[in-house]
Image 1 (tube, rainbow, N blue to C red):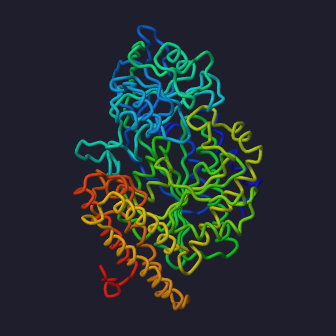
Image 2 (tube, one colour; image 1 turned 120 degrees about the horizontal axis):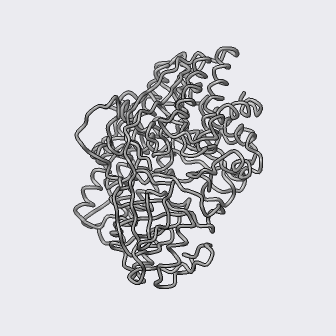
Image 3 (spheres, one colour; image 1 turned 180 degrees about the horizontal axis):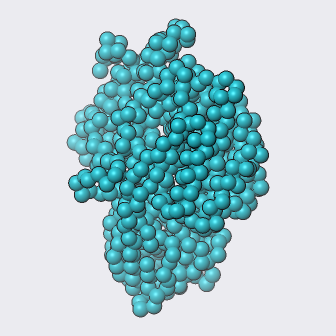
Length: 612
């Protein structure tokens, strides 16, 4: 029902504030908030708001010797503050491979000011974390013309918190100035980080000297040799004065209640704020959120559609700072959401190009996504190239905290240009209607309509069918791949005799049997039996949440997911650790996390697999 004409109309309304920034907590953000709330109210969706008081940073000087090379307007939120001085070094993208190459060339990094190119392959936060681990004193990041064909004075905005949410209340919600012991996220950088223009970067790069850089390090700045710098370079001084502001932000919600199980719901959400125009980042997603709400509401009130479960529509603020509004809400309602919110669908960045379709999702949603692709008429032909639709979900994905922090099956999807790593205009004043039109070959309306159809079909299947369309068997395959790699690793490094993956393999077997038993029970279930379907769904809904490790603290390790989290509790960590005793503990805890998930999937305690 979300036609091209209606989407175009809503796009126009949502982009009324496009001419100015609509930073989280600003008056422009408030105007959009009111528009969303009013739209939900007109649709009789009983809208409500959720208020948080969060710490946001707002804008610094960069000098070579005594010469000032820039006072950038752009900034990197959550940088450390102060002044740092050091020899300049050029580090390409700051990837692990780039930094290893610098170390092999004996380029000293400790105490230096390192200059990096921005890239769509690594988040700004990860770039800063990579170089901070090697002792640099400050990081400067710029847009090189080889990667971004922008004016040399284009400013870059972003955040460098390696996490999501308010980093000064990790694991806690930021409700109404609630007082918690002074703490901060372990993902906050300890070094200064600042974005600079390409013009400022050129001034530094022409004066740093040192070894000739490898070919892979070469950019396209005029009259720049891209030398590596180091001891022979001039000193660079970086001053970061970002000010922390206690900011009131509002999330807006509307609900279409289910008729059979109203206490279970699928969530659809979109970021509302942006540092610049934010057309691809925020406007398109907010438009689709409103259009999907209108279409489903019309189906219920006019066409007699009776969803079994509820649909909750959410407009998030402070998304630019690392999904702050969404994460604070998840932290505040963590217990309430368990086995109630069973899927999150992100509408952020769904159209950034044309030619390819990409998805990041929980394996529980893979089968539903694949069947939806076959049913939805789309403008490019999903998956026709034969390539996989799926790619790993990154921490900067707005769906990530729902999956890795809250254990809610989540997905994000996007139309992208073929061969493109990321939409180049994010974090700049160039993320506007004209540039998105160019990136989509002027097919924005049809692509946005296609995105709306995908999200709408997914949501409707999830709230309509008697049994949740979450495929527990797909997790078995993904878990099996990780367990096989861990077993091979332990055998190859000679650990197998004293440190075996045997119990982990048995836990995987327990999960596999539980998944098979569930499918058998499903085949023998009368779908008109409401209680029987409820019990089946209850078992399905436990899977994702029970892959959150119960052995680590949400405050210290917020992303507790066994597969998609970050930290020593993950299966990925078992492939990287070297200390034998630490590995032994990690292996035991991972085993019991997986076994606990298998037991919950089995159903009642007398049905649990006791073969461990």
